[in-house]
Image (tube, rainbow, N blue to C red; front, side, top):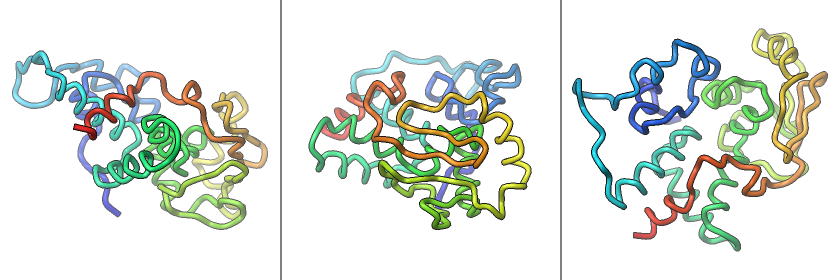
Length: 208
């Protein structure tokens, strides 16, 4: 399974904003972007004024990196989003938000999407009672996600069980802290998805 294996802190510095790719570390003084907000590369590099194409490219890369999706898969999501009724950009974000790894993160079972992806890949979760280890698995309204019973005493989930009591999930999801489970109540509306992402710039990038 292909994935990005280099330093994720470089991605935040490249995009010029915190993408919160390392969980709680991003909120601490150890955050690399807080200490070195300049772009990665040769010392002293300054950010240049970008043209229209550059702005669109950077936003596309930002969205792709936030959800930890590689280029080909991201483009496939865009094509599929364009074939659906409704606004293409919103459809694209909806595909990304309803991925199993993202929902595991949103429910509070993991502190970052990278950790959620790893937990899913290691087979810790079941969807509607069926063990599922595919991070990109597309969830639908009514689906129930839970930590498999034989895995609930493992360390990550002992910690999660405590933090879930105070975790605030998006309105389109519900949590059952005691059962280490959650459900998809509905597909997310645009106002229930990240507002700091400009999906229209992504649409413009691919529509050149």
